[in-house]
Image 1: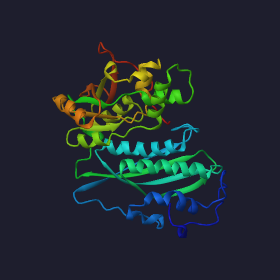
Image 2: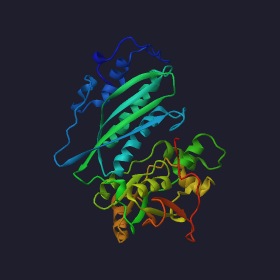
Image 3: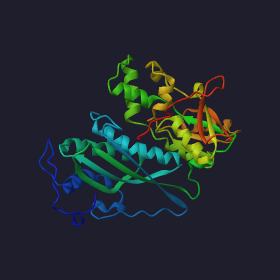
Length: 344
């Protein structure tokens, strides 16, 4: 979303259903420039770049996530929800780092037949979450595509110097903990796409909302600074993201399947626990704490109003690859072909 003086003018322009033909710059000015109001570093999207200046004593944190129609969301999902999910999955990454949100840049590849009304609703969704989470759009790009709707967002945050929480700090003996409930995202997707799952209307609405609108655990992320040894958000599945922490830390996270919290609505779907554990799209925080920190965990749960559960332990690697495994109540490893969602 840059200045028109920098862009070539000989590219084909998309004709938008539900509105007159519009240039990308008119779309930016009408729907996206207003999202910068209140942040002078964006220059109203009238320049080719924005300016970021970290506050004294703070480290700048940068994270990027993209979403593609049919892969990360359903084509019929409401535009507002798609926008909010795009922003929230990036805020979830900031939360896992102990970061505070500052601003973001956005790149949109719109299908040529997309309507202006759809884009307007998308921008309204971004506006709603900007107000809720306290950040602004400061730049990006927009273009037409013959492929599916493709969106990418880069979020900027900050944390006190040297206090960003990394994946690679887990140590043998640590507790493995998770926030909230696991499996709501996977169950919500199954319900939203119309799979034959018999649950009542309240459970259905709850699960679909959890799939479409994850809750970034920013308050918990702040509380974990200086306490968590390692942290990641649960995007690919709690076991898959435990593998990422274990690999980065050179240890093995041993998760107890029965200890992983599953919500009542997710259980009522009848989906197998393993499917819920490996489904992904939960955007809860998975983290490790020192072995004697269970009292601290209880206090942290109360202070952040977030359910927190101990779901396993970290072990030293003994003749095995660093990563993670899932065990049953007898301590036997549960063999799983796919630990979580994979793009390739």
